[in-house]
Length: 158
Image (cartoon, rainbow, N blue to C red; front, side, top):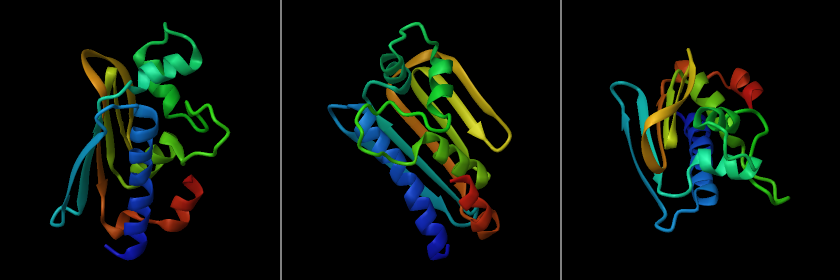
């Protein structure tokens, strides 16, 4: 990978960690693992926190406990949405992460409390999950092939 691709990946991955630490409110922190598969030109990353979860955080922020998990996850991935209450400017948000992963022909898979999301270049699926995950687990897969990195086009997404 060239340095520009590395920098772009690092910038977007840091947003995941920032969200996990700031919004997850986990007493035990954040767990992560990842691997780059050079022969496949892909990077896989998993980030887990055992905090409040995205659906619960959105319900609390919107002061609406009846919002379904799928609606809360969909809300969290829309442009300009955040559960931050302070005036301190934040990161680029989950919408930016979604656009980045889609532009790299990648995939995001999220399990958060009673919600599940699958986002890739072809679909955005938000649904209430039949199982419950305490916290938030995010799996990300992105192509690390220079052919999937058109920086002029990507800059328009962010």
